[in-house]
Amino acid sequence: MRIVIALGGNALLRRGERPDAAVQQENIDRVSTALAALAHEHEIVVTHGNGPQIGLLAAESEADPELSAPYPLDLLGAQTEGLIGSLLVRALHNALPGRRIAALVTHTLVRADDPAFTRPTKYVGQVYSRAAARTLSRQRGWTVARDTGGWRRVVASPSPERIVETDTVEDLLSHQTLVVCAGGGGVPVTADSVTGALRGVEAVVDKDLTAALLAEDLKADFLLILTDVPHIYRAYGTLEQHPVLDTTPAELRRDRFAAGSMGPKAEAAARFVQRTGGLAAIGALDAAYEIVHGRSGTLVRPDLPVS
Image: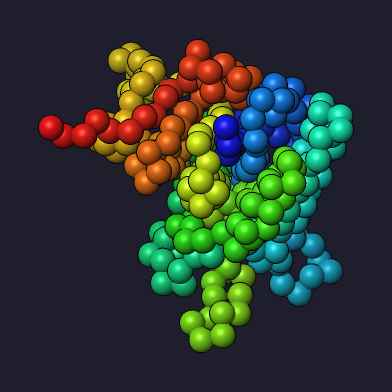
């Protein structure tokens, strides 16, 4: 079975952890253990988030007196693909000796006129107090919004239209290579309507929506979205909270999950299942093997046809 796995930001940094290299290495070792069992039995493509890492690099770039202007988000995204890709390749190499493993910097095509450029929603970087967030917003021109536990920077998150290197990923899979790609949703680019020339844009593409598109284009059988909760929950954070164990695209979309958290994951799962007839699931990283085998997580299956 071909599985595309989308790792959440908790794969590298859990909430409240310092963004130190040693902390990320320790968490990556946990990731490789969770994925190794699946990789023994299935064809695997791994994508990952980059919110904490790109936020850290952006803050460092903003504060660097040697720069005449901060690095744009597309280049910072490419840096995180290399950084996280290297950590994953090394850990997976150790967990799967003899297995071919490659990390590929990939680019995601978006529309220059996507309305998301005028409505930033994607959280990046660390959590700040309200006062600190307001100060940074004034000083650096950031848009900030409330997140769980505090305030964070938000940036544009246009919808992915195409992953430029999909054919290369397919070639690697045909040679029994475990591929790490589309990190942080891929480097966001637009294409010239006449020449096709690519140009980076100031945005971060949602990694779950990119993973769904990649899974569709690769004709994957299963899209597995791993996060820090064991299921999707309805009425999350309230006394009426309860897990969703089995659902369909139509049911997921009726629930209208929050845009800054579970919403993109639910939409990614719904898109993949609706467009391909395959299966998707959302659940906890440490239960990856159990989720694929139907013993954990939220399963998303095709809607039943109307009779």
